[in-house]
Amino acid sequence: MTDDRLPDEFLRRVRHLEPAYLAHDDPIRASGFSGGPQRWRAEREPILAAVDGDGDLLDVGCANGYLLECLVAWAAERGITLVPQGLDIGPGLVESAQRRLPRFAGNIHLGNAWEWAPPRRYRYVYMLYDCVPESHLTRMTARLLDEFVEPKGRVILGAYGSRSDDIPPFDLAGFLTAAGFEVAGTAFGGDPVVTAFAWVEARTGRANREPGADKRQATTANG
Image (cartoon, rainbow, N blue to C red; front, side, top):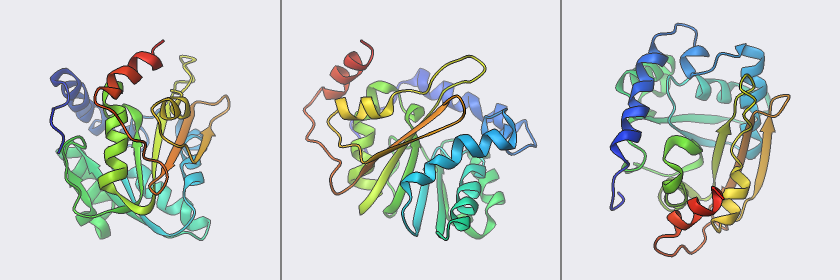
């Protein structure tokens, strides 16, 4: 657990997403996406560019578990076996994910990623960059590398833009590089590009961080 908490206003906004997601029967819309199944796959499957072999995949902020279910299926088409693991702050979403993945219900956990103590390590850990405020992202990435991922595993960060609003995805690779992490690879999805993914390997990715580095990095990233 870290020394400080996430801002209350940020946590309120995150928790307000749960009823909106649970209001939909369509699993894609219940995942916060309204672009339909073809775009869903085209804009999410590039996550697997970071997956180079069998292993457990933890989705931090897994919502209803549909993305996990899809990634497991898409990976199987490539001859890769992924074991789904999930974490979400919303109890209703955790229950939904457990119903969706009944064989792996025990792998779906309720918790705030900033404070959660993982019961084990995972080969792959996927997290959207805005699961924490940008000011906390450097420390969260370092913590994922130090406490969540296996010694030769990968932390995969994702960013979703908006095609309808013409908003590009956040520059993950640029942020991570400026924060002192070694980016092992990147992938993009959509036409035009609307999703971006960057990953860091546990054995090489951690940089030595000085106190206050997050605040300096956030200032740099925002110009």
